[in-house]
Image (cartoon, rainbow over all chains, first blue to last red; front, top):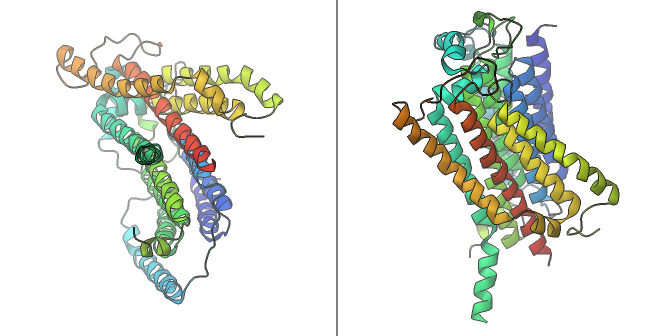
Length: 183
Length: 114
Length: 147
């Protein structure tokens, strides 16, 4: 079977999985459903000949599920029935999004067909990458030699996000200490 | 073209989740779904029919003309890493809000102030 | 089965043997980042998952004695500084920020790509330590809440 048929099957499976993740009542089941959608993205990356991305997406997806399950487990609360305003909002949003989808079909016909990319800048990287940088993996050569400054920016963003997470979670110890000082 | 339309439909499912759901956990899940749709679409722009991954192997010479576009793959690698930082920070915020208000419902959190 | 004590005896015995293999696999993926798919980010996550395996199997108190959390913080922060230090050395020896100034060997060797391997190691350490510290903080927060 050609790659396009496999991708259409996989994408329909992902759309059904994400709708199930949004409509389930149990929190844990919703998190696991979105994890399955992420693994489907990893299989799609394998089908499009991107093994580097498939490995990274698989591992980061597993870590995302670990963090979400660790944060949201055993936190049940009383869920109310949706009010009337919420039902009207759901209906209006559905109609608007379906209209946006149908109106954008002629726009998608202008994109170059699937399977024939333009590749005006990548020819240089593919032909001269191995000789100039000495790396056999052209994606590594692009992110760590030709565009290493972008990788510095990405590392800084990840560092800042982790510091922000630690600051938010650790406030309790300071609050406990100031309460003990006051009493 | 059908593949790109299905990616756009996945993105619209994410937008539907962010606008209509009141549960904080569903909002975080919808943010993740939107991220998957955008990353997948970028990589699908670079696929070439009948081509192979962009890695040179030692004893099997491959012409560079038959390789997939490596540039979208480099951009999406950065994007996947930043999405993880996003999810971790949103989860930490949700945990602190639950500790203070004992609920994940965003309508209740708006009404209790201070 | 309290949270601070870890899991059953079977899990502990298997973890004692297999966690070193997982760490070795993570180091292999980091070092061969310029020859096969993977690189610094994937290898870093594998190292974080190895430490997480030890924490889940043996409990929180064991990890406090086994790993010094302040040392992990220091490795994380100094890796960010080393990235910039490699860039400034690139200005000194190569002419532009983050230039590839180490001489290349032959293609397909392990040490053949100059600063690409050094940057892979730096990124692997940073991502691994940072992600493990986030999960450790979440576990600590959860246990503090229960008391």
